[in-house]
Length: 65
Image 1: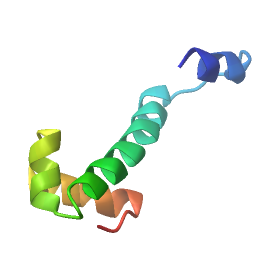
Image 2 (image 1 turned 90 degrees about the horizontal axis):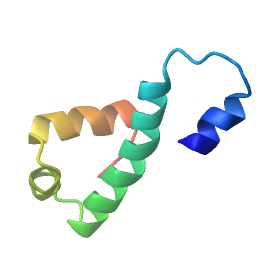
Image 3 (image 1 turned 90 degrees about the vertical axis):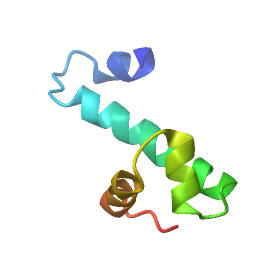
Image 4 (image 1 turned 60 degrees about the horizontal axis):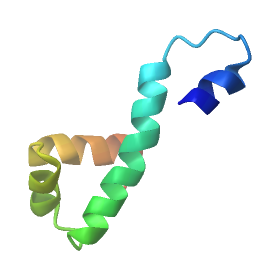
């Protein structure tokens, strides 16, 4: 996070939260899905979110299970 803010070099960023969230969620979802062998129900349970929420996020990020 510090590196990202430093790299902005004084430029304003209005959506830092969304940028950071996306950067963290994508690899998290990929790793958990791999760990659960693509089973979305197990992955959602492991993440502590509803399966429908996981499916929505996967679609949003273009991640196939």
